[in-house]
Length: 124
Image (cartoon, rainbow, N blue to C red; front, side):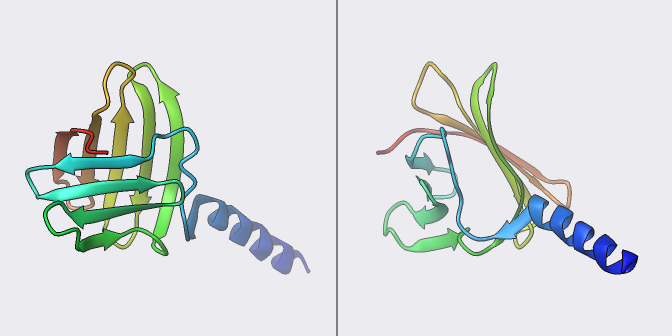
């Protein structure tokens, strides 16, 4: 009986840190921001994040249904910060929306140690 209770507790703890499903962006702004280096349009919806081709609108990547870990939307001295780790991509994403402009600062850290940082101008 103790083993069953222990296993259930472990499962509850693990499920609280990762899930596969839609996002809840809370206070983070929704809209589209352009990464011109990769011709990518980051689309933030109230329940999902997608990456689209900025010219054709074709889908590059959809985070819906992926395993998302350590998801958070928090205020900071720089503005509001959205961060999460996606197990399928092996990347940690951090988006900061400052209080003084419409742009996002994006930082991506990969499991291999590579870092990508760019300012994304607001598109709509």
